Image 1 (tube, rainbow, N blue to C red):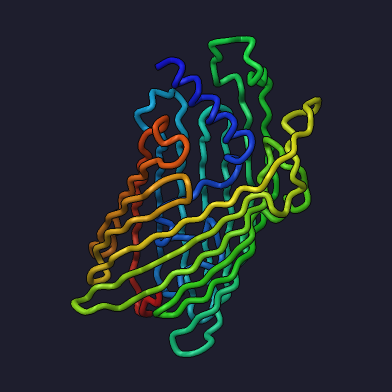
Image 2: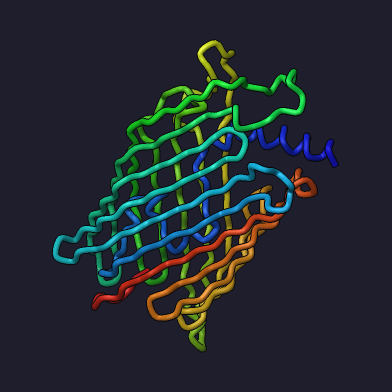
Length: 317
């Protein structure tokens, strides 16, 4: 058991050092996307508050399992054709890294045709990354992965841009986040640039049923130099890109109850369920790890809570 936990710790460290600097992704991102794409601010006049928590690798016996939290709030003003929002994320990667990202979001909406809406969005704020190796106690003080006890804390300006097209049958969006990181080296305390794209359908069925197939793609590091620098005197390490692909299918009944299943390529299978009651939405997602380390990892839980204050304008998405 001790050998397995040591192997898991090594795997998690490698993922943290190389790839897990990327933003965490929600399995239930369908309900609120402005942290990933600022153009996704309500195409309806509703005040929307969205929060979600994600707990990874529950049951593994690790004292510092990855934990993430998200808070989004946004509102659309019809007279200005503009949406305003804010997004706050907290990501505790487990061994060393902690990320806090806070930003204000703005989107301008263009009515292309009846029911068809194009939204252009921009968000700006700060991203704080802390690298604290002293929080992890190494059983073997001579372990080559031991990064010492020096704490690094960096706060930097952050900027995102995106667009989204919505229609009653289709939703298409794309964004680029952490724009200031373009062409820069990937550092332990810097946010690499992300390219995000997604496509969702909306199939109307009899008896108040809808089917929502979806696919999402994220590239981490394509716009960076492809080098990882973990310290002033550290050796530069060649760094590849990370590609995340998600596919899902959700069944929606009466616009209030949903069941869904998703698959993240070589990573996890997701099972989702939730309901809407008046102004409240509650959702739960269970991620079952798959791929090369499926037998070394345990379950991941995600809980979503959303408050919607209704107004007169009808919902598109």
